[in-house]
Amino acid sequence: MIIAIDGPAGAGKSTVAKLVAKSLGYLYLDTGAMYRALTFKVLEEGIDIADTKKITDLASKSIISFINNPDGQIKILLDGIDVSLDIRQSRITKLVSDVAKIKGVRQVMLKLQRELGIKGKVVLDGRDIGTVVFPDAEKKFYIDAGLKERVKRRYKELKGLGQNVTVDAVEDDLSNRDKIDSNREFAPLKKADDAIYVDTTDMTIEEVVSKILDSL
Ligand code: DC
Image 1 (tube, protein in one colour):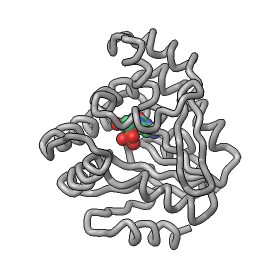
Image 2 (cartoon, helix red, strand yellow):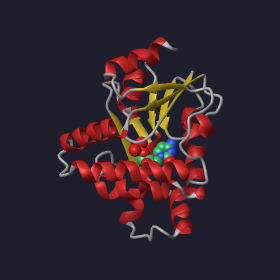
Image 3 (tube, rainbow, N blue to C red):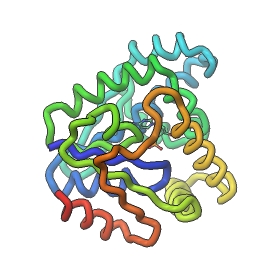
Image 4 (cartoon, rainbow, N blue to C red):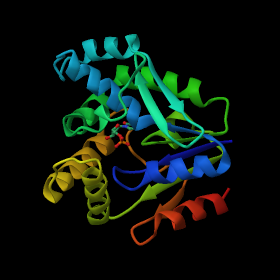
C-alpha cells in the first residue's frame, strides 16, 4: 500500500507520517527533505536562485537517498553525505519553495520519488503526493491546521533543534511558503479530491496517528 500525506508547512505531516510508517513497518519518505537537500547544494555551489537551468542540471546530477534505520531514525544523504541537520537551517527554509517551483527540478524529483515509492509499503509526505506523484495511492490524507497553531508547533520544533528563531519569523516563513507552494504553476499544494481531510488544530499527534491508522 502507498499512503500519501499532503498539507501545508508545519501541520505536523512528517511527525505523523513517521509514526504511521513505524507502526506499520513501512518505509517513510520525506519528499520535502529532497527539495531541501537540493537547495542546500544550490547554496553550497553558489548558484543564483534565479538560474533555473543550472539548478535543474544540478538536480539531475545529484544523488539523493535515504537511510531508514530500524530504530526509527531517518537520514537523508546528498551525494553520499548525511545532510539531515544542514537542511533544517533557516537559510535553506527561506529558499526551498523557490527551488521547488522549478519545473525541471520537479520532473527530476518526481521520477526519483516514484522509483523510491513504487514498491509500496511506504508513507510519503509532501505537497503533491496524492495529486501528482502517486495519484493512484490507496490512501490519501490532507493534514491541515490553523496558521497560529502551525507557527506554534514549528517554533517549538526549531527551538528544540537549538535554532535562534522568533515567532514572527516563523509565521512569515510559513505564510510565505504556503503562498508560493499553493500558487506555483507545476504541482501546487492542493487537497486531492479523494484525500481524507484532517484538521489537526485541536488534535494531539497521537490522535492524528490513530485517526489515520483507523482509516486504513
Ligand atoms: O515539508 P517541508 O517543509 O520540509 O518542505 C520543504 C519545501 O519543499 C516546501 O515548502 C515545498 C517543497 N515541497 C514540494 O514542493 N513538494 C513536495 N512534495 C514536498 C515539499
